[in-house]
Amino acid sequence: MAPSVTAAIHTSDAPESHVAATAPAPDQNPLRRRSARLGERAIIGVLFLCGAVSVVTTVAIVGVLANETIPFFQQIPLSDFFLDTVWQPFGIPGNEGFRLGVWALVTGTAHVTVIGLLVAIPLGLGAATYLSEYASPRVRGTLKPILEILAGIPTVVLGFFALTTVSPFLREVLGTDVVDLFNSFSGGLVVGVMLIPTVASVSEDAMSAVPQSLREAGYGLGASRSRVARSVVFPSALSGIVAAVILAMSRAVGETMIVALSVGSRPNVTWDVFSQNQTMTGYIAQSVGGEAARGSFQYTALFAVGALLFVLTLALNLIASAFVGRYRQAY
Image 1 (cartoon, rainbow, N blue to C red):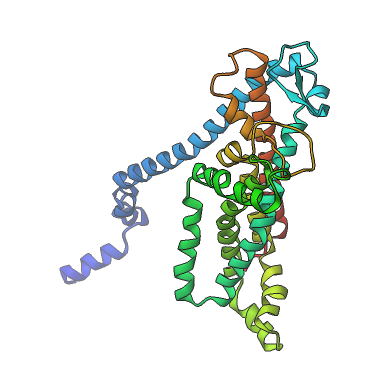
Image 2 (tube, rainbow, N blue to C red; image 1 turned 180 degrees about the vertical axis):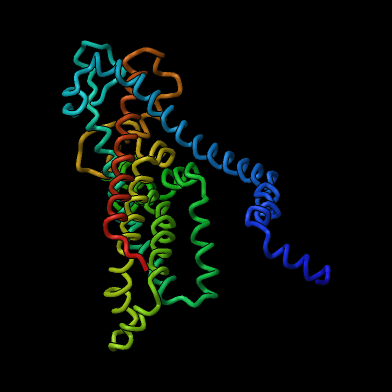
């Protein structure tokens, strides 16, 4: 028998273990090089660190708030803080002039938030509807960045605008005896202007995500463009629109500089939005500059108000997440 044929027969008759031994080891596979694994692990570690920083920061903020708020409520009853309607933290503890009813600050915050939403929701949704349903791609590409520039204006500039332009205009139109120079209405209007890009941008993204086939089905039934927007696009993008509104509400509750400059520093429980008032964030901004000595009632009151503000914004975010998870439409 020829040597080549004999070698072929011996090769074909070789045991499987010999064949397996000649296969490349897993560590020699070029797709599983050690250097590639080390680089990927480094990237994963950096990404994990980025996520951990946000978690640690949140935990640290909660810890600081709790550490300073607990001593406050050990000396001030919860009933006085949540049921009293007078906020006078700079008196002498134990006297009649020292009262810590947070409802006065909550009222001012509610005024600004409601007025801001009444301005931002119709204008923001109107802008989102136009950009999503009526504007051409070229017009949308031009108008949307211009609209979002409004979100980049410093809030201190908007606060000065409310104080020097909006309030004098209202006083000239309605009368100086009706409108105070510092008032909730001016602050709420300008906060609403600040919220328009938030409502418009998030709502427009949600409406643009609605499949074109749903719109075409509406057009096929003879519906007009406005009818399709109201009856097809809005219900389909409802979860995103509600999320935009709640996000805007959270921003309005937490806004500081506009209300600190334009709403005033006289907290009171009133329905008059043209009178001077004070919000929770405005009180913190105006009192943190040194009037409250560390360890005093006034100092711990800052953290008590901050903790309440944190709980309110957290509740709004949780409501938004729950609503989006419950009613979100997946296409």
